[in-house]
Length: 360
Length: 226
Ligand code: B12
Image (cartoon, rainbow over all chains, first blue to last red):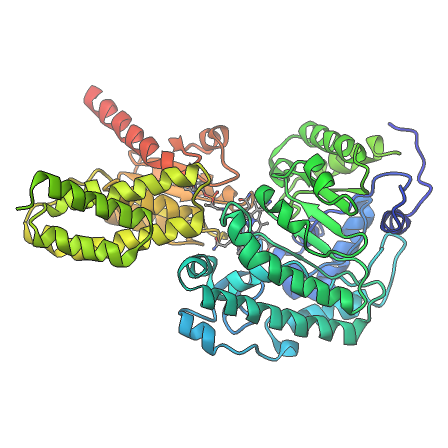
């Protein structure tokens, strides 16, 4: 046991980091814990996505029970498939973890050229997002640095991939670049309308625009194509958010993006930006790439589910040591979504390792 | 009949067309192969398929990525479409190396890796029964029985969906203990594959086919011993 005593709330810790100061200890701010929260509190994974009130309460209780920064979140990686005119299904059964696109809005390059961005207010999950943010914006708890995590920044390429299916976007980049660029423009058009909608409803204070980029990982595309097709579109949207008055943006850099990092470094994220990295990126590498930003990361989520409590504790401890060695601000988080089926003992071990070793 | 020199030129053009993902060239040179009397089997294996194997190697070296591989596959299939009628007309059947039922387990839509695995099996001359993604568990059992395939390949990319694997394996074994089961996907490793009761694991699409061939060899040896 560390014998240290908290002198700051989690809200104060994150606000200190945003002000380029070190907090008393490393805050724990896991990325995307809505599925885990619903399983932990005895509801279902689908509730995390389509029952805003239940999802909000589950996340609130989970953060309180485990000593985490509370950043109520709703959103999903396949976003765009439904919102731009296709269909999804909600997660059901024992093994599903998130909504799944059943039918993409476009099949052919001609479909892309003909597609128009539907009214954002009624698009796909947006009404549920609004319902969720309406609830979350009503209170600001002592463990809450932001109470609206507005979906939309840092996700243009993935959204475009969800409109056509990533395999088609991949092919069009090489052989029908005009269709690929059009898809990305449509993605951005949608996101920019969404951003304006959020600003009208919730303003900028206490609001953190966020998103993630799995589909532009180097597991799929080359750094050259990231530079051409992902970077400019993400940068355009992010700049729009910043121009609207948001001070910080949150990027979840999902999957193996090592060769893309020089291009990520050129995308505006605010001052400081909040950069959540996957387990495939070294913490020190992230620190060098984003010298002015806060780094969140990055133990392998699979360990949290499949490891023993000791393994989780050790992995977390090592991560905290690496993170605290950075000159950047550092927040502990898994490298991706908190696995919904993770055993509670492992989650306790994870938090405990930060409580024991995370003191500055 | 094309001369030996001309034949090797045509094969090389076919290989190159696939590697450079030039669909039109693949079609053009496949037609040329037929017109000039190149054996369509040879054109397929030593031309088109060789190009695809080289593309797979470029992927392992991180020179090619998923888009490039998908385009190479399109060129490969375009060339095959031209050669296929001649292969069928010859009355010879290509030696089928094995057959595999392949799919991404229930709850999981990550199918890009599985699609690459499928391509590599097809290139290697296997018959692939692709069930797609988010496949209900019993579908694997039914499809294996329907097709009497040698191998079932399961893919999962999430720690949640990966939990479906031991259940599928149990159900397949209950109906047909002889089937060989191969696992893959980012969260899987040899230990997990073993713990789940699978017969094999491959980290990449490139090594998946070799692993499957090994499994079949082992199966034949076991049967030989009986
Ligand atoms: C692209 C991607 C997506 C895309 C998928 C698009 C598609 N149609 O496939 C989208 C955006 C839709 C997506 C959604 C989600 N994703 Co995702 N995604 C990824 C990412 C970045 C890359 C996966 C990929 O395509 N890799 C490229 C291919 C070529 O590689 P591969 O799949 O590993 O396949 C190779 C080998 O594994 C092997 N192989 C594969 N299958 C098989 C089968 C056999 C038999 C064999 C022998 C070999 C083999 O061969 C392949 C080629 O070499 C991974 C990151 C990662 N670390 O994998 C996360 C990842 C898989 N996703 C993750 C998550 C959490 C999600 C979501 C749940 C998020 C959410 N809450 O919405 C949803 C789930 C949706 C659903 N219902 O399934 C997590 C899973 C964490 C966990 N619990 O384990 C990962 C691991 C990210 C992370 N850093 O943790 N995602």
